[in-house]
Length: 255
Image (tube, rainbow, N blue to C red):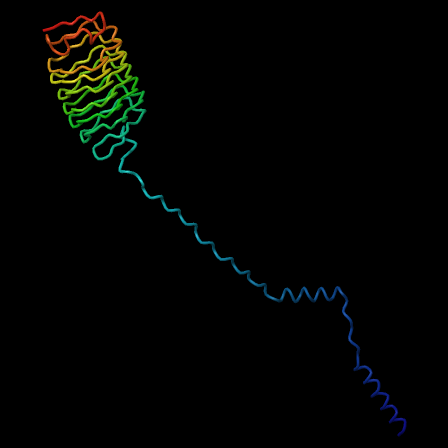
């Protein structure tokens, strides 16, 4: 009996010793492998998309601060309310539209490519220096409506050889044709009353002038420097019948 009890106690002690196993420490390699497995099993977080940028605003156009002057590429000049304000300097020939009533001062000044301009009957006024410095201008066709021609309107138009002034023009203002060195003939209207100062001064090619009897005033030095002026026709006893107005060699022919 004692031997059986001792054997039982030994079996129980052995069983107890086997059940108390101490924890086994994992190696670093095993720890890394476990971490990798955990990471693979964990679903990756979806990155949050950055908010879309708002579209850039289109800058507002500056308000139109024009004074009403109209311009377009097809027109040879700018205009406003019936007034031709500025010609385009590259035009060689300009036919002014019949809705124009006024050609402003300086409108064609120094348009050195301009050779011909046609002015309709609707135009009544041409401003000062309107064609001054148009050194290629050869031909000007006036409509019958022009009654005012400003000072220096054709000053320095050195290619103009002849001009016929409009029938309803009563006055030629100062310096209108000064230094038009190629001008040979200038036809004056029958109802002209006034030739201003220096009107034909420096017109070195002017050969002949017919001055109507209606002219009652001829200004200072109107024909000064007209070296080629050989004769002037005028009414006997009229204002134009005065040798002091012309170069020394000019012959006055009265009728």
